[in-house]
View (cartoon, rainbow, N blue to C red):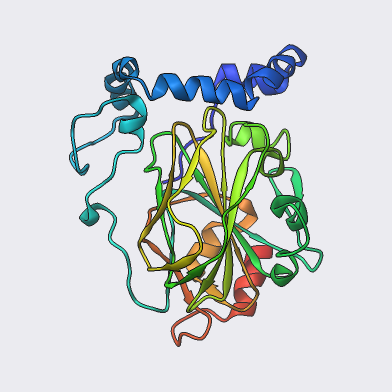
Length: 294
């Protein structure tokens, strides 16, 4: 079941009033995130763990450890492998993370729209270099909430390129902000081109969020394996975008139906979302694109 829209009175004040938007300029600045990060890395921050667990009804029995040195140590807790099984079928296209998934069609101009904000791939990636190949492809948006698992993995076997960091500010990635400003091109973000064995060139973009100035990717250029941990986010809700070339991935028909009109559905890391377009049991690519446009 999809998580309910955020109705925080604080966020409503910040994003829907003139006074709030004035304060927001300071709160979204990277120095504020760095200051918050230092506190959340400290032993003092452990006092917030118990209340956080109660508030979100979290079950920690699947974690590798039960004792944490700081709030960020708790927030980036690693789950046991059996808690997030990976579909190792070579043709299976999996989710890189836990989160709320939405699917968008990239038109021939490499434009797409999310909750009222219009985006272009050159703006998202900081230039034209890697944008052209994704015209008429798909953009998968995974929005992580604060109680989600904040580690993410590789979706296939292959070779990764350089990590490209694009500095910016740090809006929340909750729906109220997505409807108010183009968060994904204003926020700090990092992207990598993944040359995969079964799904072509996939660009993965990790987007920071309010109080999440640190995106930690573990590896530089080189080979990777399906299900291998790629990196993690520190405290806060964050987002991962996957850009897919046309006719490479056939998403499951039921997933496309549920995601029509930009609706979000919950997914988990390792969950099968579709298949390589050449797989016999896959939805034909043209149908996938048409459904995503609906």
